[in-house]
Image (cartoon, rainbow, N blue to C red):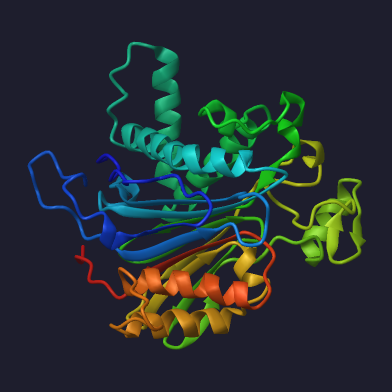
Length: 359
């Protein structure tokens, strides 16, 4: 499994943006034989503080993250949006650690499935290895991906209970240790392979595929008014209060999240998955926090993004964007602001019109 392609800036703070064309130096990973770099998807990403007093969103983008065994040693691309609440701490933790946890899980799967751990002198290790190998043999590729990603979500959720990552990396947040458990974050992860779009979602950030002029949601928002979510909450002894919107115990407007220790009996971190086969009609993929989706429909977002990707010139007078995908992300955030959004806004637009090597 190859190393991840290093990004020039993995910290997406207020009013920051990044696009795939701006990091074209030689830092990207190559194989040990000096083979040329694998194709990188064209994308644009931007986070805006909006009209909030603080920034609680975070974005993580890792093209060519690695080439795992379960993807036939072909590269995968990693995109994620984290929408924090109760402070920036959990979203920052997810940004800094989630992709590393995924790498660790994939490396462990690689090691065991190829049998490279079988030479261990520890009998317990050998027993574990054999049992895990049998499990992998019974699993489908989808089941393996689900297991790997569920493990990542569970580990980051446990870490969020007692970790203030903003303080941990030397950024003062003024947060007393006893408050660490009061924050949380959504987590929307997308793994892009040559043939499949894998989405793991926890919360109300959303992934939408633009395909042949149609907007296809690849995730479903986790809100307390979803019948199955409300039933789960009530089965745990909780209740949903309807005020300005449905809220768990009248507090939180989402039913799944990373963190939120004080509500963990009702707010779970288990993600839901979609696996979507890529098709020739696929135009782009939009990942965004609810700062966009609260005021912009799926259809409108896809229309704006696809129009940007089809244009080669700037949209406004005197405006120059470094790439069409970055223009799409920027214009979507502008549209949300123009429609009165009061929240932080984070948007990633991935151009899917790129040729991949068939395997």
